[in-house]
Image (tube, rainbow, N blue to C red; front, side):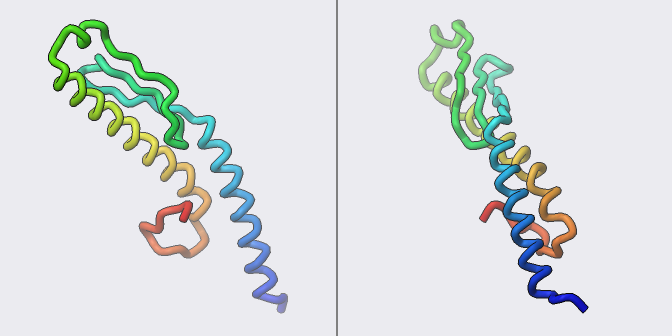
Length: 107
C-alpha cells in the first residue's frame, strides 16, 4: 500500500496548481451587467475590475437619482454574473474531492 499522506499531498499540490490556473483564466473573463433595459451597461472582469461603463445619453437628461439607481442595479447585475462565472469555474476543481456542498472557493 502506498503512502496515503504522500498521495494526499500530491493531490493538494495539483489542486493548488489548478486553482492558480483558474484564477488566471478568470482574470481574462469579462461579464456585462445591464440595467434600465440596457440603458446602462457595465463591463467587469471576474476579478471585480470595471473595464467600461456605457450610459445611454438619454439618461443624462433625466433625473439624477434615477441614473444613480440604474447604475447601482447594473453594478449588482455584473457582480452576480461574476459570482456565477467564478462558481462555475471552480466547481470543476472541487468535484471529486469530497468537500462539503456549498464550500466557497477560493477561501
